[in-house]
Amino acid sequence: MTDLRLSPAKLRGQITLPPSKSMAHRAIIAACLSQGQSIIKNVQMSDDITATIAGMESFGAEVIKEETKSNFCLTIQGIEAPGNQTDRRIDANESGSTLRFLIPLSSLFEGSSNFVGRGQLGVRPLDIYENIYRKQGLRYDATPPPVLDLTVEGKLNAGSYEMPGDVSSQFITGLLYTLPLLAGDSSINITSPLESVGYLDLTLAMLAKFGIQVDWNPKKQVILVPGNQKFQAQNYTVEGDYSQSAFFLGAAALGNPVKSHGLNLESQQGDKAILDILEQLGAPVKQVDDSLTIENPQLKGGGVIDGSQCPDIIPMVALVAALSPGYTEIINLHRLRIKECDRLQASRDELAALGADIEIEGDSLQIQGVESLKGGAQVWSHKDHRMAMMLAIASTVCQDDIILTDSECVAKSYPNFWEEFERLGGVTHEWRLGE
Image (tube, rainbow, N blue to C red):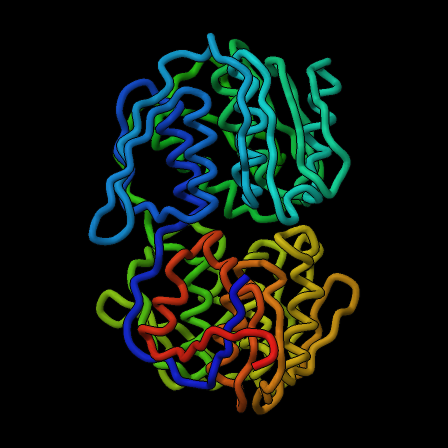
């Protein structure tokens, strides 16, 4: 456990955003399912990505990691043919993507797959898969929450699948990587409005890149998936991560002159919504040469902001809204409760501890902007990487120091976050209880 004392200090300078974790997951899995060799460039070896690589290696893929000047290049020899596999244990760590993407994929291989994990992963819903496995008469042995200890075995059948769209698009993605490899055709019928549709767009784009064709009808919310397809090996470079950009673009909105590099303005990432949200809060993002930044922000209450399609950036949005004069309501946040922590409650509690006027009403955050945050408090990351990074940015606009407990959780998605934070001018000191 690492606790930090963070002192108020402006961030300034330039930052190259880490590669998209969401796109890296998808590219690595596609490459591992392809026959032949793929090269995936610009990969950051976060805890989540490490878990996905290890899981795919357990199925028979070969992944060679080469450290480059920035991040890693992966040379991937795809799985030649499913079968002849022994029982395997897959440690998903705290990665919901790893867990939900690989559960259905494991049905392609002989033997059982035992999934384990830690943190809050054991309480994140898996009912959709449990229902599918039990309906098809396949093995699904799970330890009750909060422990994750799940063993599955047996091959999924091609056919018609139904699932709600308001839990997580990760279930849809897991099936979309699996169903094309089955002998028959399949369909996925989404029975309620689809949230985080941007993540589905990323999946569809990655499948197409690796030669998999599906037919998505957004009006009818039906995906038709022809069977007997094969992934085709490709070379791919992962673009910058809009989820992580929210922290530094948000910092710029709060008066920290930071320029962010490495972002694709044509990206399909759902968290690109940060650009529109910051503009709604009075901080339009501008492109300057090859960077994005905010000049002379005029923060204001944002009115109503719908967070259903971009839950990962909401803690940072809440921080900016807390310092935007006027009223902001961020709605449709029920999925924040089933992330690495209950991010809805955590965002309210930690920002309130720093002096924000913020309350929860149902599944919404109601925020009345204040002039400044006081700080002078001990706050907790809740062992959630996005909470830790949001609170780091909050320290730059507090009047007094704050103590952040469990700061090391940033390794889940951004292992060198604290190094970059300090390089830009952030002030950190290791803290021991009693100092």
